[in-house]
Image 1 (tube, each protein chain N blue to C red):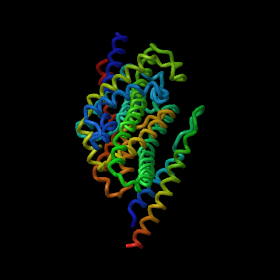
Image 2 (cartoon, chains in turn cyan, green):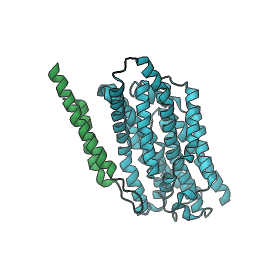
Image 3 (cartoon, rainbow over the protein chains, first blue to last red):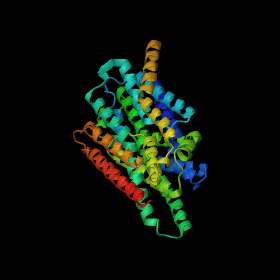
Image 4 (cartoon, each protein chain N blue to C red):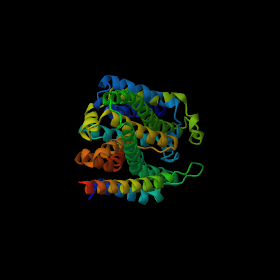
Length: 338
Length: 60
């Protein structure tokens, strides 16, 4: 029975990963679609491929951080199930509302909420608090770093190309470069986001005594099937991406030209690479939004539609408490059914 | 008033305020430099943005 439940919860974790890819597909391809470099179906295939290929390039530090968020003595099948329910509910709700919120923070909120429902304030061990502090500070830093890099990149690029008279050739060059920047961003997205599910599956297997806890010290020792299934699920999710969010990210926040698209994606990709290497679970949504705002504000601050950015900000603020509340409720229901 | 300079200045203050909250983990690289780097960068951008705005205002 326990084995069956473990398989079911792993299945749900992979569904979460799929929904994550679905929800965040827009982040990878919004700028490419908005600037008409690729048709939407071409863009999702492009992004999905690089989402999957990410495991070949970046280390598994984020998976390690997530696996440690709830103490291995506290984790149980019911807890992971409830945490995932909280995160999935929040993702579906924000996707339905067309808000680009963060799947990552929904997952962290869900796990902490379910843990809190199980053991109360004891959930906040020093490891959990460190991960929460790191995640919490980078909720603010990741969009700001994206914004900063996006702004600096576009100013430097504009300074380089402003003397070139053949504007059409410049535009053509940047349209081609967008393929590279979109690929880099998809690699960063695949690495950071797929690893969160890997961390959850690893924690579940450790909790169920199916995996040795030593993988927490050496994340590269994670079984390959976990790595491949998570990247496969997020890649498939991206292929079925959420178009409503593409519209908000690519056209409503600020109007993007190919040059802006390249700078925004490159800035966001650099931020995600940094976060993945340092084991910081960041939101790809926050990062690309910051980078898009950065490139848009280089022209003029009024190029950014602040009322849309305000809606996005509220979704960010509410994600962790919202998903934590749903996860707590789910955990209590699981307990009652038990 | 240059709105962009104000925006960068606020971003700089937020980064500075958050820098002490970045955890330093044993056996992992210290990443508090991100806090200092963003604080200084946004402050420099705020200054440049304000100077740019001022020179444009004088010309017109």
